[in-house]
Amino acid sequence: MIRILALVAALVCAVPAIAQPLPANLDKANAIVIDTTKGRIVIKLRNDLAPQHAERIKLLAREGYYNNVPFHRVIEGFMAQTGDGKNFNGTGGSKHPNLPAEFSNVPYKRGIVGMARTSDPNSANSQFFIMFAEGASLNGKYTVIGEVVSGMDVVDKIKRGEPVVDPDKMVKVQVASDIK
Image (cartoon, rainbow, N blue to C red; front, top):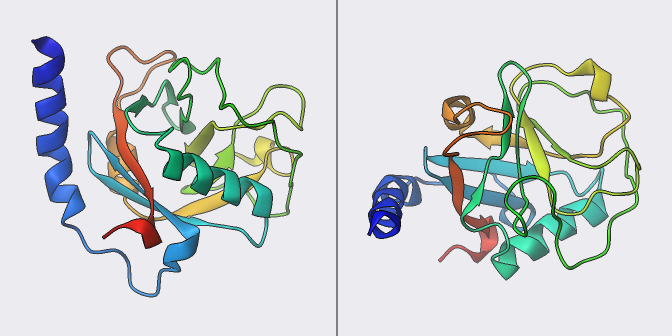
């Protein structure tokens, strides 16, 4: 019964987000729309910087891998991490192989989206994080895959914790061009 009520509450919260228009001039083929329990986040994917990683994010979104996945690690003043659709706690990845690093000179600042990985630079798979603030220590060491173009106010509302107790979730993740 509690799960049904939680699902209904998540859907009620997502309905206003679904009705929101996408930003003007958005390349919908290279953007993902994340409807969360707090609202909508739109991310412009940087396929010019990290083509393999951008394609992976779109593939996993189309497979439904990210739906109902929690923000499992959210550190105040740093970042919000999600994308573990296997174990939901940051220890899992998708069925697809890990990706080789696609590092760039784009600095980690507020709104930048990067791929999470282990100590192996070539271990990114499905998890990603959204920066709350500058993170110069990550520059050149983690693959930048995108930037939030709408919804940083939503990112700011995501419940904090490491791990997060009763975390906020990505209710539905879609490639923008697939939204009907």
